[in-house]
Image (cartoon, rainbow, N blue to C red; front, top):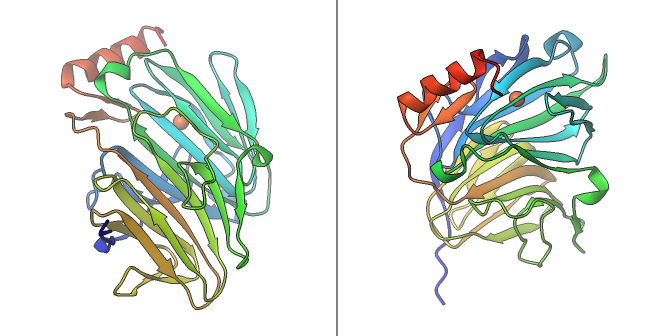
Length: 280
Ligand code: FE2
């Protein structure tokens, strides 16, 4: 079989913004530049050791029609929802929440100082699943497989399957997501197969990498959207850390308003009305 390597289709600089109650973050997807990368509606990175940047967190707010994925690499976040679920997300741990027809929750830092660093990804749901009951997949760090390679490279497998066969913690998500946290040892190469037409991105969070057959340089803080293809690969002269996120496009109309993501404006209006009427 001929494999088609993926290359860089688009470079994305994060946009500094704030959300929740003044949490400073960098938004990569869900901006004017990159409205969405179907099925991904939003990707935020929060990273600060200044408590003022994060301490007021994300107080009570609703969601309907999609999934939120919170993955931390430093610090702790406590979440609570109106169905009585509560827990603390820790570094290496993940919460994959399907808001379905509606949930009201808060996400607050479980710390008063020190570094808080993590990511929130919004994954769309197809129309047939937008009004399902809310559901969680939540894993503490020890439950998220960490693949240790002989080279010293480590891959935390949130979702999907690595080329060495490690399965992710999160299962049974409709868009067949891949979500890998790749800590590459110096001089090593990382190779990962992906569904040919899955939309995919790489976000460099430490160091820099040389991606694909043309060894295109991608620096820390930069996100790249990949071309279609069977496989992505990168190497780095010194240690690097990247997120690789991919999934199958849903290819349905998107009507988006604040914390609700539906297919039509009428459904969006209904979401606001249901929320106001206390139906969540
Ligand atoms: Fe939320």
